[in-house]
Image (cartoon, rainbow, N blue to C red; front, top):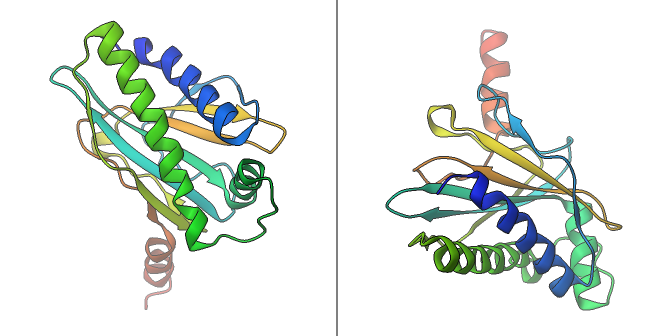
Length: 184
């Protein structure tokens, strides 16, 4: 099994999850390979919510991550519940994990049944912040899958690595770098 065998079922599964959960059609845009020397930091300077989980088998391992600007995430939540959500609340932030959980559950079933993958999954980790980064071990490749909808743009990332990938807030690293540059 190769990663290209995972892309089509992943795109199909993401489409299905958001159509069924949020009553919203999401359309994949052209995917691309993130430069191996760059850390993924989302699509724009904004508060983001991201969730990531690892899928692992004896022959192949990768992480999947969903990245939403907060404004877009709130629109998906509002569409799901049929009521307006204007701020990120504890009760709704776990929906990102739930959407990823459904995505990886469906993907796992597809690739295990059709391709004999034998995949196991980790529990999604969700992070919220205004300066999130997705560092990858050993410059692991990241395939970026943008999805457009009437509610806005979000991204699904396929990270090719045997290690679990956890996003983090890059604010502290930037602050420390600024302190170093001024000799503090």
